[in-house]
Amino acid sequence: MLYNSIYSLFICEKQVTYIDFVKLDRIRIEKRAKEILEEAEKMLIEKGMTVKTLFKQGHPADIICKTAAEDDFNLVALGSRGLGKIEEMILGSVSSRVAHCSKASVLIIK
Image 1 (spheres, rainbow, N blue to C red):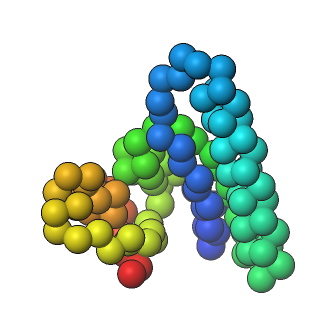
Image 2 (image 1 turned 135 degrees about the vertical axis):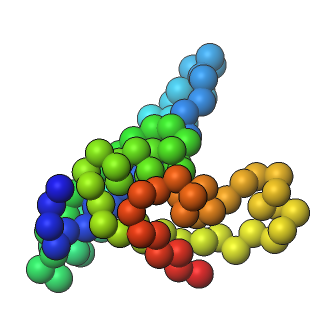
């Protein structure tokens, strides 16, 4: 665990890809994700923070909870997309799942 540090996560949901053009899109997504992480890392370092960036694949709530447990987080802060009740029932809510599965405190930001 890094004390007084921020973890910046970018999570892509894992999908089975059978077609080459889908794999190409996947490569583009991963490249852009890494660029976003680098930009966030640079910005936070300039503010004097210790940063660890991670790019992982899988279901976002599962990855967030697993990473928080493995690295002994004391707080998980994440945003809420503000889905309506019907959309949330159908799609599920990452922030809601994290709030239930994380052993760390969870801060949900609207």
